[in-house]
Amino acid sequence: MTSRRLTGSALRVTVFIGENDTWHHKPLYAEIVRRAHAAGLAGASVFRGIEGFGASSLVHTSRLLSLSEDLPVAIVVVDTEDRVRAFLPQLDELVAEGLVILDECEVIRYVGRDADPADGEDPA
Image (cartoon, rainbow, N blue to C red):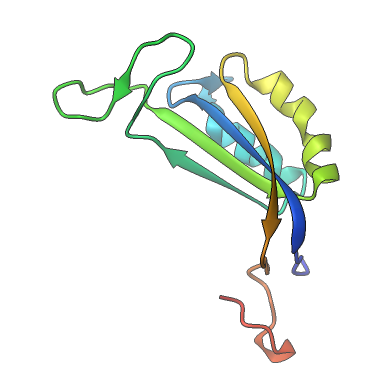
């Protein structure tokens, strides 16, 4: 696989779901990341929240006294606008309850893991 660079204007999609949300008995966040990877998107990350609430208005928290098991999760994907918009129908299929946010952003630098140090680029 060759390294891919993404710099300049991009689109960030952030998907907010619950940690316990599933797709075919597997974590929904894992399926979203798997599909983003399969679609060739530049990158995706999953962040587990420590507290939050959504449409249900129930506050989910990681504080010891509450011990919630359905904490908020955010999946963040960044790529060119065309590639992200082409991926949105898959999110429509996967996310039954949640929130999807699109933001225009600017990427400073992205270099894939397989960048060759001999080409003068620092892979870090």
